[in-house]
Image 1 (cartoon, rainbow, N blue to C red):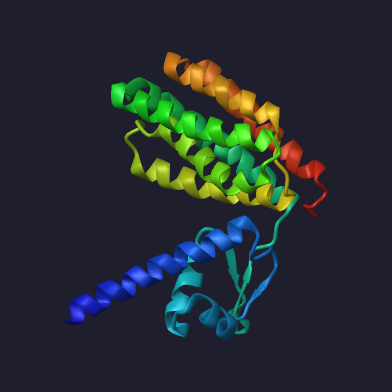
Image 2: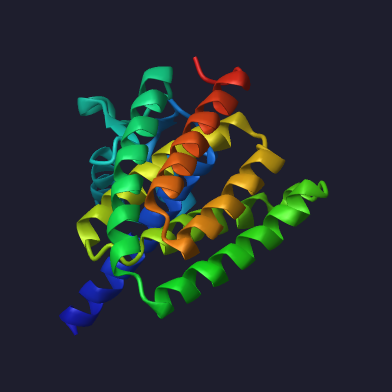
Length: 224
């Protein structure tokens, strides 16, 4: 019985962890926002002790800052962190690409085809002005990039890249705008190069893709 209770508790904590994390990445909890425990307890329907543990977990990803006895706040956004995340993403993703291209099989190619199909469908609607598909695009964007590196055979690399990708994505969500056709073209080019297993070409596209993302965020004027 105790084991079942513990399993349920862990499941609830995992769900709330994902909810708070997503709220930070999406900007619902903006940079620098104080996380008041009593309000958060009601909002996420979880106990104070579990909430503290979740927020402490989020500090390890630099999404939350612990303020000692004063509680927690959402990590601030800065140009310096944006540049650092961009550099780190390029290093991790291009390394994972090289490993994945060397090991990928037919099933891996199928994952890339399916992921790009979903992403392209969402991007088509965004280009047509349907901004309600932004959340779908965010999810499909990561699924596409993840599919490409999914054959790298390193769970540690994938987990680290996922964390960096999300933290980098937070800046794009703060910019509150879709990059338009250039990002769609990048994804199509990256798709073609992945199927061809062209490491040098895919690496160049990822580097340009990330750097243009930084420029887009900075042009929005929303990062101090």
